[in-house]
Image (cartoon, rainbow, N blue to C red; front, side, top):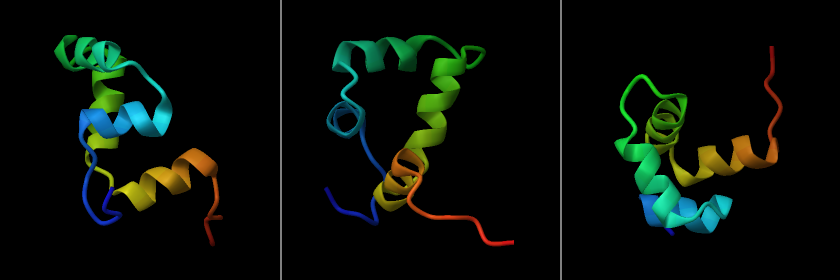
Length: 62
């Protein structure tokens, strides 16, 4: 995995442990489904950003 690239569905399987078939269902569920929106949101992030969100490893400074 390259940290500055955006992830593919197979990367989400590794990162979150979600079965590939489930991710495909989410991708086909349509824009009004929250799972589709979540997958779309995560697909636009880099690997570093996903790790920060997943681990809550960085604090937001005001």
